[in-house]
Image (cartoon, rainbow, N blue to C red; front, side):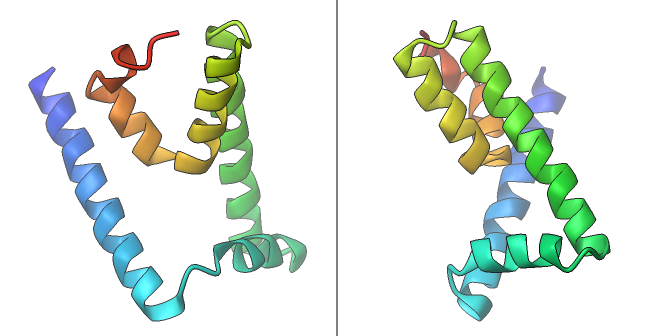
Length: 100
């Protein structure tokens, strides 16, 4: 389990660092770029669509796992918008503090 947690920590560190640099260079304006790439029908848009479907599936699974109770729906939304940061948190066992 320790190697897995080290992997999650490495992912968290890289994502937070990369996101920080991106926000510093381009601001918080993610959604128009994200959906604009999809509307352009190119490879970046295809990747974004695939990734977005994965996030939606993740949120749906989290909500289903909690039997669609209000707290589970909240965690599902967090899974969609939190992405890997949500997954890393649950991998470190923080989901037990949020158990439904």
